Amino acid sequence: MIRDYRKRKLQQAFDLSVDDLQNQVKDLIDTKDPAKVLHLVKNTINSTVWIGRNAIDYGASHLNPEKHNEKIIPPTSLEIELLEDITNKKNISPTRATFSEIFKVIFNERIFSHYDHSYQPITTIPKISSTLVLVPGVFNEVFSSAAFERGAKHLEKSFGIKYFSPKVKGTKSAEENAHQLAEQIIHYSEKNSDERLWVLAFSKGGIDCFRFLKDHHEFASNNIDGISTIATPIMGTSHFEHRLIKIANKIHEYDDNFLYKTIDDRLDILFKDIQKSLASDYQVKWFENNYDKLPPNLFYTALALESDWYDSHIWMIITKAFLQSKSINDGVVDIENAFFPEYFNGINLGVISGHHLVGNRSSKFNQEALLETFIIFLEYCGLLKEK
Image: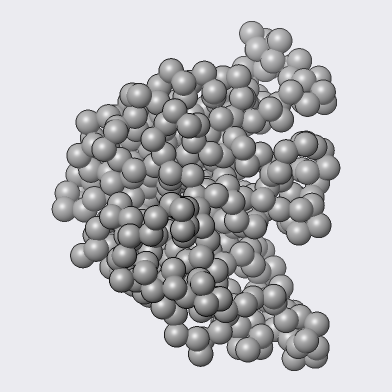
């Protein structure tokens, strides 16, 4: 079982990498844009590393399968009962299972179904009428694709669920990115007027989306079913209160300086706007003052991630060491800040294991199972409609 699973992951890495690189080469030839050469080189390196890592994992599963066997277990009898009720659209009372528990039961089964192809899952993936809109977070430009795009491609290929990912700048303020989202999402909707949209936002992308929804209340009410956030600091983050960051931020005292303005305008590396958008004292006040201006007919869900330092990506290990927190977190966002407050009518989906970079294309995290879980859960709750 472990060998087959690792073989499929290696094949996936190879297929997606080849497809992406072919599209980028074609785009480079068509546009003749020199800037895209560096993008192609970066993605070639990332793809090579991704394929290489999966090749090593696959080889290791042959040499010592027991050592590399994942701890993935099938559903228990109680979970099977819940899954059957979910499939049969039976109402599950909160005393029996909360929304977060239902979500986790579905997620665990979807993971196992990917791991063991001989297992026949109880839940099925409905064909939804909504198009998925993927909104990435901070510094997404560093990676080869938008966060969780690998999972979105799986939904499109396997179940015909369309998606697109608007471009935002990871270093810009929530207000500026909200404007960029508006241009692209409204344009897409005008060209595809028969489609309704479901927004899946990662990290700061969720904050950008809240600004967009508030500023385009009527459009959102008429065209968007809802928004699901993953590891979004809805209540901001206190990490910018770290002593070393405060020292570094003293540079902003010279924001009237010509050199400061030149660097800030051209290189986007001073991060003044992004810090304002993410700071707890600013974000908590913004949400308190604006939550009632968000379209009330949309659904709102929030999912948090948690990871121990030794389970994290190397960059997350470094981040955890630098931005130490007393709260449970995913390396960047404290889970208590990733949930909607009690005064807001949102659905908190609980916490699953994963560091803040699980949305990366080369992550070993099962993005495919997670996005399948969202579809099943939201359709079961009547929040997304089946075709």
